[in-house]
Image 1 (cartoon, rainbow, N blue to C red):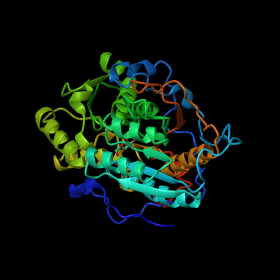
Image 2: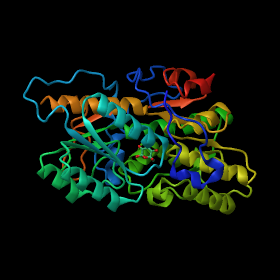
Image 3: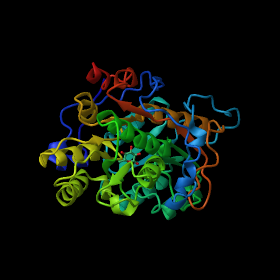
Length: 408
Ligand code: BGC
């Protein structure tokens, strides 16, 4: 098992820094998506998909086609003439290291692309959007046949992606949709609307376990507004929470309920921690905070740090990414939930897509219609996310050599 360095941007907030615990990036058994029944029911998001209409991510709910999508089905093509050489250069443009999953992806892409016979150029853009633009341009210049993009800002890469297409390269949006451009061929990701749905349900269930009846005081947090996923996570969660806000079961004490009011710029822990500090001071001197919708683990730990520093009891806090420190926190009874979006499976399915494309085949698409990026509907390969709480952590991480020992 190899480990990766903890070089996440979040380490600026010492109290929530992830230290000393390597996360496996092995692909052995990479097909091992957890199969256990989630603690929070895995509702089909039908009826919820319309919620994304206001988001500017029109139709990006993507939930309906994803159920049962394991990514394991055979490619539907592959017998045609090779589309590009089997040892072609593949560019992978990753965003900033805002969560462990991106660091895992970097390592997996490097090793697995090489194992599949490709040449790999895998880049992070910690410097921001212009760095990512330059990296994509450089990949085109070097002759990359496919460019896989985890965008910092999926709306800011139009001309670089067009140049990639003009050079004959295939463009794949990885994890985050590429918006407002025709220059994207496929989208591969976990079903992000469903992630939000599962977070909303976990928040309700966690609070009901502590206090059977509402009303419950809650606060809402969203991710970075430049990341196309942030609104989708929020819309998924609000598809569950809004009816409960409307009927009075939930009270957002601060009144901050709109996406723009609750975003966390750059997915930065310190921004979430500062906002939580301010909310506690302004609204919770006497009121009790029952729950917080947090879009990912990094922000969940920042929120918990803030609450503890204020000397308040830890509310029910959701998360996402199954980060090492959050899995520990869940097992210790602090953070309530996370989401397992096993990076090994996402990278594995991306490589399968690449090898299929290389052979001139058609990739396995299980949602051909939900991901309208503003210019075109991008054919999507979606994987199913899994909610994880203390109750199902052992089964959920049974095949993860790093997380499994934490659940014993
Ligand atoms: C990913 C999440 C991650 C966030 C911050 C999102 O686009 O889907 O898994 O927590 O970025 O890195």
